[in-house]
Length: 114
Length: 112
Image (tube, rainbow over the protein chains, first blue to last red):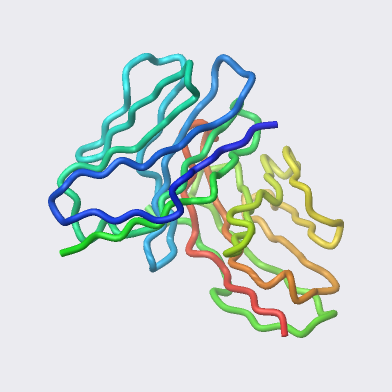
């Protein structure tokens, strides 16, 4: 069964600094998809970034980038130049195949200190 | 374009009652997935519907059911409500699951 682990329940970062959120997953598939979602206090979950496992290049979306280590089954999210609006719960998620269900990790609560 | 719309946003029900939640996906999205979110269990997958057929199902009792209509709108139903069913129920739609979900704002269900 797929599992997703986020070992940091809470993290904090100073405004304008960089923070890295950790995620590990367990899958027996060679091709799969990984995601980071953000859920601000307003509770609407939004997709931050996605990675296809067969692509070697790490995904990047503006200030958000990932460090995808396939052999280690690690998928960390780096947020650069942190802003107050980045404060939220961040969920790591994995998808085995196009027709499967997305499994979410327990989440990391990120606080941004002004 | 309009986002994923979930109604109602808040609901208070009594133990033993049943409830129906609604989700209208983004136009053109045929896949609708439902999740239960609680502080203790996180996001738990309930089921996914694609073109009116249940494609995936999570590990929830039979009291939890759903359906999808020809216009892709989906409903989930919970019968014989229990206190433990109190949660935020999230609906998510996608064109292709691997592209990522678009979530609705959720329905906060409180069972008293």
